[in-house]
Length: 174
Image 1: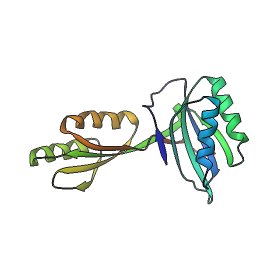
Image 2 (image 1 turned 60 degrees about the vertical axis):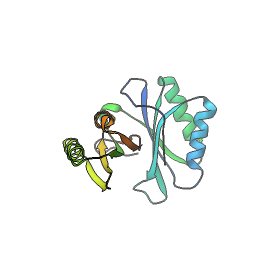
Image 3 (image 1 turned 135 degrees about the horizontal axis):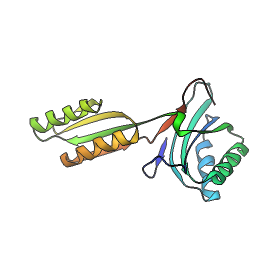
C-alpha cells in the first residue's frame, strides 16, 4: 500500500521514519490517523512485509523540525501495533522507488527511441502492445523524474510510482 502526495526532496526538515509494525488489518489506518489528528502531513508512506514473520516495515517520509519528529516518534511508540520506530539519517540510508510508465508508441521509430531511453536509465520493458510500451524503473526520485520528464513528449498514458522505501546502511537494523 502506498500513499504519495508530493515529490520528496532532500532537506534538513525531511525525515525518513522506519517503523516495524504488526502485519495485520487496520495498522496503516491507525498510523495515518495519528498523523491526521496531530496535524502532521505524510509526504509518502510505503508498507510491506519485513524479514520478521508477522511484522511489516513502514517507511514514512514527513517534514518538520526536530520537535515535530520527536512528537511523531513518541506518538507512534504509543500505538500498540507499533513494535519499534527509528528516524533514519538521510546520509546513511539506502532509498529507492519503483515506477511503471506506459508510453504511447505509434511508430517503430518512436518505439526504438523509447527503448534506448529505458536502457540508458537502466529501466526494463515489461509489457509491449501495438500502441504502447510499459517501462519499469527503480532508483532514486531524481532518476525517475528525469526519465518521466524525457518521456512526457512522447505521451505518457499511465504512470504509477511507489514512493520511496528505505533502510539504513550497514549492520544497523530496526
